Image (cartoon, rainbow, N blue to C red; front, side, top):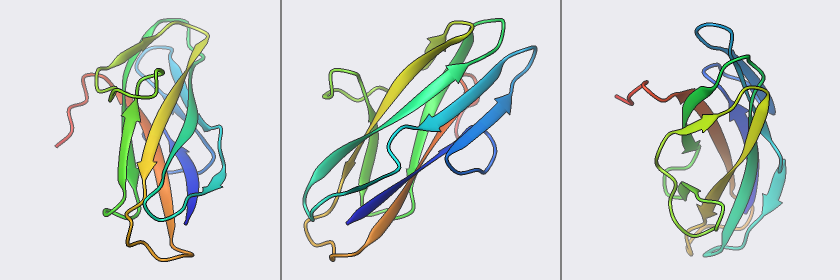
Length: 128
Protein backbone atom coordinates (compact mmCIF):
# COMPACT_ATOMS: atom_id res chain seq x y z
CA UNK A 1 0.00 0.00 0.00
CA UNK A 2 1.39 3.39 -0.89
CA UNK A 3 0.21 6.58 0.76
CA UNK A 4 0.81 9.84 -1.02
CA UNK A 5 0.53 13.14 0.82
CA UNK A 6 -0.97 16.32 -0.48
CA UNK A 7 -1.57 19.56 1.35
CA UNK A 8 -4.27 22.07 0.58
CA UNK A 9 -5.45 25.24 2.19
CA UNK A 10 -8.75 26.30 0.65
CA UNK A 11 -7.38 25.76 -2.86
CA UNK A 12 -6.51 22.64 -4.83
CA UNK A 13 -2.78 22.00 -4.81
CA UNK A 14 -0.18 19.39 -4.09
CA UNK A 15 2.82 19.48 -1.80
CA UNK A 16 2.19 22.98 -0.47
CA UNK A 17 -0.67 25.44 -0.63
CA UNK A 18 -1.10 29.02 0.48
CA UNK A 19 -4.35 30.61 1.56
CA UNK A 20 -4.85 34.32 1.87
CA UNK A 21 -7.22 34.78 4.79
CA UNK A 22 -9.28 37.78 5.82
CA UNK A 23 -7.06 40.62 6.90
CA UNK A 24 -3.38 39.95 6.60
CA UNK A 25 -3.07 36.26 7.44
CA UNK A 26 -1.54 33.66 5.18
CA UNK A 27 -1.88 30.00 6.11
CA UNK A 28 0.39 27.43 4.44
CA UNK A 29 0.00 23.66 4.75
CA UNK A 30 3.09 21.61 3.88
CA UNK A 31 3.29 17.83 3.68
CA UNK A 32 6.35 16.69 5.66
CA UNK A 33 6.04 13.07 4.51
CA UNK A 34 5.76 12.62 0.74
CA UNK A 35 5.08 8.90 0.47
CA UNK A 36 5.10 5.85 2.68
CA UNK A 37 4.27 2.19 2.36
CA UNK A 38 1.89 0.45 4.78
CA UNK A 39 0.91 -3.23 4.87
CA UNK A 40 -2.75 -4.30 4.68
CA UNK A 41 -4.26 -3.97 8.16
CA UNK A 42 -1.47 -1.60 9.17
CA UNK A 43 -1.50 1.93 10.50
CA UNK A 44 0.79 4.83 9.75
CA UNK A 45 1.07 8.50 10.71
CA UNK A 46 1.82 11.29 8.25
CA UNK A 47 2.99 14.74 9.34
CA UNK A 48 1.94 18.12 8.01
CA UNK A 49 3.12 21.61 8.98
CA UNK A 50 0.54 24.40 9.19
CA UNK A 51 2.21 27.81 9.13
CA UNK A 52 0.70 31.22 9.83
CA UNK A 53 2.94 33.75 8.11
CA UNK A 54 0.52 36.59 8.82
CA UNK A 55 0.73 39.38 11.36
CA UNK A 56 -2.23 38.18 13.47
CA UNK A 57 -3.20 34.89 15.11
CA UNK A 58 -5.24 32.49 12.96
CA UNK A 59 -7.85 30.07 14.26
CA UNK A 60 -8.13 27.09 11.92
CA UNK A 61 -9.67 23.66 11.86
CA UNK A 62 -7.98 20.81 10.07
CA UNK A 63 -9.90 18.72 7.57
CA UNK A 64 -8.42 15.51 6.22
CA UNK A 65 -9.71 13.44 3.31
CA UNK A 66 -8.57 10.31 1.52
CA UNK A 67 -9.05 9.32 -2.11
CA UNK A 68 -10.25 5.90 -0.90
CA UNK A 69 -13.22 6.00 1.47
CA UNK A 70 -12.53 2.52 2.88
CA UNK A 71 -9.27 3.68 4.51
CA UNK A 72 -9.75 5.35 7.90
CA UNK A 73 -8.07 8.75 8.30
CA UNK A 74 -8.14 11.06 11.30
CA UNK A 75 -6.24 13.99 12.75
CA UNK A 76 -4.65 12.95 16.03
CA UNK A 77 -3.11 14.84 18.93
CA UNK A 78 0.67 15.06 19.31
CA UNK A 79 0.51 12.25 21.90
CA UNK A 80 -0.36 10.01 18.94
CA UNK A 81 -3.50 8.61 20.46
CA UNK A 82 -6.49 10.84 20.82
CA UNK A 83 -8.38 12.38 17.90
CA UNK A 84 -7.82 16.13 17.59
CA UNK A 85 -11.10 17.66 16.52
CA UNK A 86 -11.02 21.13 18.06
CA UNK A 87 -9.91 24.20 16.12
CA UNK A 88 -6.38 25.39 16.83
CA UNK A 89 -4.94 28.87 17.14
CA UNK A 90 -1.64 29.52 15.39
CA UNK A 91 0.29 32.58 16.53
CA UNK A 92 1.65 35.06 13.97
CA UNK A 93 4.77 33.80 12.19
CA UNK A 94 4.46 30.43 13.88
CA UNK A 95 3.76 26.85 12.81
CA UNK A 96 2.26 23.68 14.27
CA UNK A 97 2.71 20.07 13.23
CA UNK A 98 -0.46 18.14 12.49
CA UNK A 99 -0.48 14.34 12.65
CA UNK A 100 -2.81 12.26 10.48
CA UNK A 101 -3.31 8.57 11.28
CA UNK A 102 -4.17 6.32 8.33
CA UNK A 103 -5.45 2.77 8.81
CA UNK A 104 -5.32 0.45 5.80
CA UNK A 105 -8.08 -2.18 5.70
CA UNK A 106 -6.86 -5.77 6.16
CA UNK A 107 -8.39 -6.79 2.83
CA UNK A 108 -6.53 -4.11 0.82
CA UNK A 109 -4.58 -5.37 -2.18
CA UNK A 110 -0.83 -4.93 -2.60
CA UNK A 111 -0.12 -1.93 -4.77
CA UNK A 112 -3.26 0.02 -3.88
CA UNK A 113 -2.66 3.73 -3.46
CA UNK A 114 -4.44 6.39 -1.44
CA UNK A 115 -3.93 10.14 -1.60
CA UNK A 116 -4.34 11.91 1.75
CA UNK A 117 -5.26 15.60 1.59
CA UNK A 118 -5.09 18.00 4.51
CA UNK A 119 -6.78 21.39 4.51
CA UNK A 120 -6.54 24.25 7.00
CA UNK A 121 -9.91 26.00 7.00
CA UNK A 122 -11.13 28.99 9.00
CA UNK A 123 -12.41 27.67 12.33
CA UNK A 124 -15.82 29.21 11.74
CA UNK A 125 -16.16 27.51 8.33
CA UNK A 126 -18.62 24.76 9.27
CA UNK A 127 -18.58 21.67 7.01
CA UNK A 128 -21.77 21.06 5.07
